[in-house]
Amino acid sequence: MSDHPDPRDELVDHLPALRAFALSLTRNGAAADDLVQDTIVKAWTNIEKFQAGTNMRAWLFTILRNTFYSNRRKAKREVADVDGVFTASLSEKPAHDGRLQMTDFKKAFEQLPDEQREALILVGAQGFSYEEAAAMCGCAIGTIKSRANRGRGKLAELLQLEDGEELTMTDNATMAVIAQGGQGSF
Amino acid sequence: MTEQNDSEPRPHVAAQIDENLKRVYGEVAREGVPDRFRDLIAQLKAREVDQSEDAQ
Image: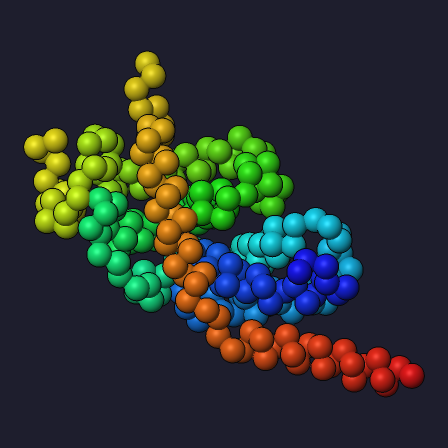
């Protein structure tokens, strides 16, 4: 399956993950698709720079994030055009299993700074090691750890998870109380 | 001294957050991708074939 003679044949297998990463970075559907498109073209035309046998997803993610930051610098625009696609396009699952309300979680996630979202996606969601993520972002391992931890801390704060016991809640009504700032009773 | 420095969450909270991240991210990744990406790859492939034929 992974024995492709041309590594570019493998590109298509990574498209869903690339798009998810792009959406989490841009938080804008059109911008995410443009970013994936640029990444595909760059990967295709620079395929000789890909080292066979290494992690192609990591290579593609590196291209994508570099393109994202480079575009952002060029645009000289710090305020992203967040269209809520990352939140809105997702199917809603009933939270009967005691987990967080997904919509609240996604909304909180969208509020994090770019670097923290990126670190959390790479390490927390995509499961890259801190070492891999640091290599992809061109920064120290400690920097990635710190960004991921600050991101988790901010999410916990936004979702009012720090008191711990909320995590065992099982129904939407209780969650709604929390979401409305009913932390006083905890 | 060890309490909540730099808003780092406790391990069980961090684990819960990561679990939800995986869930959200997995949902987005499972949505499928627009056809334009596969079309683009097909175009890149086709262009390359053209070029190699031109070169001959």
